[in-house]
Image (cartoon, rainbow over the protein chains, first blue to last red):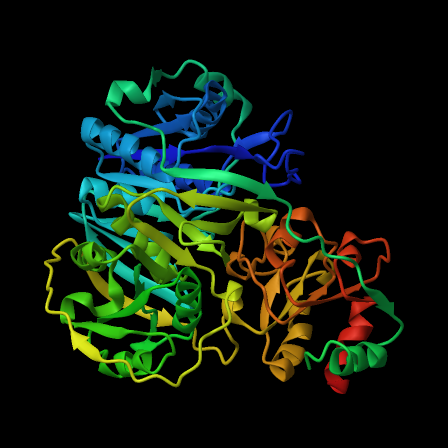
Length: 249
Length: 308
């Protein structure tokens, strides 16, 4: 079974973001970029499926600017066999990415597609579900456990208040939640080897997909700044303030 | 304008989030229908009919919609969406699971986690884990939106809207329900708790997290942790509050032994009142805390528990 895994290049999760002075967007100039944390979990899951002998090949794919090839090389270093880069400098929204991934699914015919549940930049949490709808495949979102069992995959999902397990026919789409696994770090020899693994470069036009969206970003602002409050001297003073001033007890 | 709100259910009952989504729909304006879909959901439909602002409740009560699996729910919404200009759901795990399927099948974008309505086509939503707020305008013919319930006050319950059955039945041979394990703990779920108490690396080890139990019991609080505490192996990952964990906005957030890394602040800074307990009086957490207490948490926690 072939596994397709989608990754996204985003701002590193440890970086404090800055809004541009003209409020047009977040300023990404000279900011450290990395693979989206949920995508790291997706790559790890795909690689583990290969190590278990369930997957025969792991193909990594990304939609983004030329620099996003760094994240594909990371996926290759972590154990993906080859990569597809759909290069665009346009702001590709979830729907456009899902349409492009649907074309890749049609071409590659994977048994399983694994994606992060959301990217930590736009926080949309949409692409996997949209891909499932467009390809007509079932979805197991927010997965904390994935077990492939013959013609089916059992996915345990993190839902509000607990866990839900569902069974899906294959092929299927899975999106990852935090508890699914702990991603490994790439070792230096693997990083060297990854440079020689195949990486195909395509464009949205190759797939006949229009990237432009009908949603426009009018303004980006910093949220209301939170001001530090007061230091209290004792537990008694703290309880008094919470009861009588903040009125939360 | 006409709006369809997908009702959120919890164990077959109407979930509280729905009343918040209807409040968002009122700000958009127009007729508001509520769709209650599931199996054995008549009681939930009657509860929805009581909510102020609802024009009518549409009930799809059929085994195929049991547990609100994404594939049949998406197909049902596609059947019904033609009558509406907006489809809204709460940004719960159900809304997030189902609504993008509707959007994709209607070839429109979705706006996720909306926290404010500027007009019928312009909305505010948090990006970068709430570290920036984007104002976005949708020119799509159908607006598909998930609503963050903390952004809107719930509507009241003085209504008696008509309830009508929806006879659309879809096929589903692709997905099936196996089991559900809902947290049996008396503690509330982290994402919806009114009070959250979290421990960080300063807790020292996993055993010491028990010091939070008694306080959590007295306050009816959920217990969380910083990523540092999770990475150090003190507690499991599902307790993580932060950009890569759960985003919480309780009435009261108590951070114990947490220095206040950016990625943690991103997950809790929308809390109404923040208390920080830390031995380092220079810790960045004090810059966002309403009340800070500098000292040894191993002395402070037992005292706090006994005096609450």
